[in-house]
Length: 279
Image: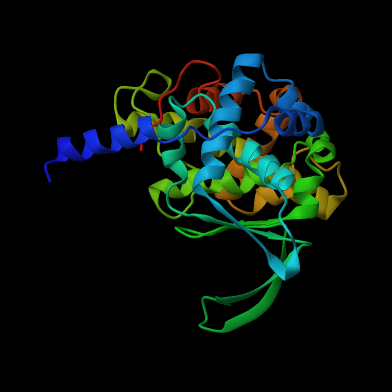
């Protein structure tokens, strides 16, 4: 079938199908549980509600170890997962960033993962790792419900496990996560993809190195721990995800800690400027 007929058929299907929605009372409950969502302007809340409804329509939730994922739990996760997409055009287009997976697995507690790592000498090391969440390349997202449920409290510390894992998904759009997601055309006024990446790393590399040094000093010499989650010092991809957590749930404190990263994240996420996602 010609491409234009496919597009026409899909458009007709979309106009005939009922538009997904979240009941008003359910949505208000989610806003009450999450002050950083309630702080959004009314137009932004309406956009996030539409995004979240479409997200729920296209994803499947699975409770691990007998956990029953209620409607309220699913809406809470959807709203936080869609927060990074808020300024990326039409909801259906923005959600294309999450089209590489369907399933979200919710655990009743932290998950324990078995890991293998071969060192430079060729010796295989096997160990276990306790996880609050995990995003798998072209695979499902795993979340620990107690960490999701505590989002209102953890926002004081700039932490949010849902934002963290779904930002990893954005980073993975360009391959293995490295702390630099695909950048939109004209990012921060640049004229080429190379210039866009240079602008990105010019801000992120010194911020990451400075943060790593602060964490190392705290570990070795007992200096004050930085406000941002020290897990961000383990790799550039983790620093990006940890920084985005704080940017979305405690922007005021994040701006004090990392003023140089705020305009870069504003440029990427849009910050109300109608940034259109480039897949």
